[in-house]
Image (cartoon, rainbow, N blue to C red):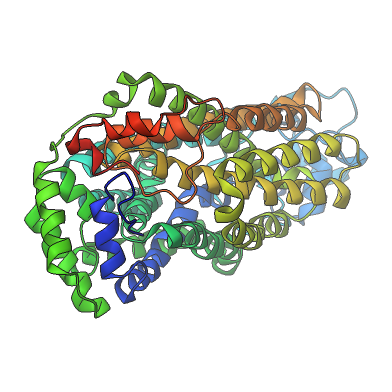
Amino acid sequence: MGKNKEGNDADSLESILHHVGDMGRYQILLFIAMLPFGFFFAYIYFVQMFIAVAPANYWCMVPELQHLDMELRRNLSAPGAASGSWDSCRTYDVNWSEVLETMTPPPEGTPMVRCQHGWDFEFTDIPYETVITERGWVCEYASYGPTAQAIFFAGSFTGGLFFGWLADNFGRVPALIGANLIGAIGGIGTIYTKDVWDFAFCRFLVGMAFDNAFMMMYILVLEYVGARHRTWVANMSIALFFGAGCISLPWLALWLSDWRKLLWFTSLPMLIVVFTPFFVPESARWLVSRGRVSQAVDVLRKFERVNGTKIPDDVLDEFVVKSNQTKQTKESILVLFKSSLIRNSLILMVMTFMSCAIIFDGLVRLSNAFGLNYFLTFTLTSATEIPSISLLTLVLDKWGRRNLTTVPMLTAGVMIIVALFVPKGIPQASLAIAARFCINMSYNTVIQWVTELLPTPVRASGSAAMHMSGYVAAVLSPFIVYSEVAWSQLPLLIIGITACVGSGISIMLPETKGLPMPQTMSDSEWIVREKSLCGKKTDKEDVECVSDKEKSFIT
């Protein structure tokens, strides 16, 4: 929302938004247009958990026994089956014709060999074929699935660099289109893979789309809404659209019961992005930062027509003059590190973001570790997205970004540590779900917080870099979950400590509640200096000495 002159000139673009409508008809349409991209965001992130999951029970396949029922095959061929805990990766080295004659398992001490003909899977917990079951990626091949997931996050890192650069140099809309197209190509390509490396390559392509397929639209829409509406737009878009995508995915997987159909269903709709230029405008903030002021004015005129509002001629003239006078920049993300104020805040923000990513992703991957139904547990943890972010929307502009990152993350850490001391099943799962509720609030606050701290010329690439730090952390979370081989409760302990440490770090970041989005580096420096708990305050006289060129953007 625009501000009157009181010692400092107003951010002219915020003033324009005030006149064109902080949240008019066009902004509402843009909010609704975020819906499919929110679903794509959820599907890109989580679909591999449903196409590359292994049933809990499996054993060596023996061709000679395939005419028998499943339980009898297992009892005859799986060493230790009688005790209920069998060797899934080895079977007896015997003449199976003789075993069929006696219909009794070979005696103890019989030589054993690795599975030579694949595996039999018991499709009770996962009632359909997956990549893992079709291609036998278990036992000595069990690393193939996690490797493909790690390569997915490597793609995310690469995509963050590339699409962040693309968005800041060629616009938000081209980056949005490119990210969704490459995600669709990678997803559909996965269907036709035959081996681990072509599968991993296609997951790399899909990884490049995560989370750029949504965040480019997210950034663009936030740049068009007034400050007082930014919180609910930022958070309800994730709660409603990403949350609904998460909740729908496990039941979509069950309904289709075919990993190839699931990929078709979640990848093909991403191609609708080719229609984006017809209804999504380029960011006026970005156009101004690149000196394309006349195009920015054309976009704002379109907002006038759709919203039924009128920008006063004097306000528009002032905007054009100030925009043309402002130094146009084509800066890289490296410019952020030239300022010690911004650099230090970004380092703290990266550490906070990584903490959120480890906690969030770790709790997701522990969905099948609490002794409950895999699909139901995933749904319940995902269902926390909607109420937690709805609550966040109501209180974020009252309590601020810092409080709503620090307190929920600390609460999540305490609950996760308490979960160490309760039995598995409903008690432990309930604490994990409550912790997920809290970390949803912290994570989504940080996502919005980043966009409000970075200046327009590097907002997309800076935000992408921040998200890349999350991808690095997410690569660690499978290994954190795997640490249960050393001690079953170690993953919870690591995640709980991470939450407590991340909470302590986040309290040192600057508050951005109610401030216009920074247009220049000077704006961002002012926020860090004035709004940090330990920042050095600037006297009013010092502010008035700032050059006229920068004054118009300082809040």
